[in-house]
Length: 183
Image (tube, rainbow, N blue to C red; front, side, top):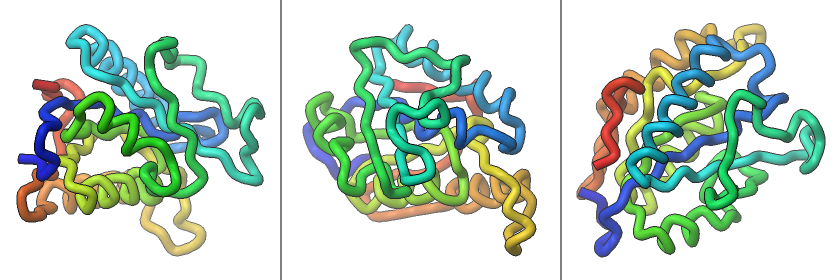
């Protein structure tokens, strides 16, 4: 249903699963294991895996904290999109990478739920993509001391509202790792 005509393919986005980002997050090991399953499944089906990697003053490119977690491996042929803003499309090459591969549908996983995941989902929808969130393959840290709900509730709430998100000519929704289909 994507509004991006001539772009029938699907891609898996893996957002910011980096050492510093994943320190102290909710259900770290389970989320990383689910992302590893998704990456394996995408590769087996010849679906593009696009890695998104954040940098900032506190997490500079090349630092240990900036690196992807060791449990996930990137293949040489898989693009890495570097970003400095929460929305993975904002001031990056993501749109060009997806257009080159004729991708109009995204399967989204990674961190952090309440910032980069939500921003990228909305960024995708407003740009015409279908965007499906993998409900058990995203996470966030505990920001409750600043008034946020506990991280498990942030994940649950994001899954709830994205499951029911709508936009003309585009599809949103959530799916479990086990139920992901790339076709």
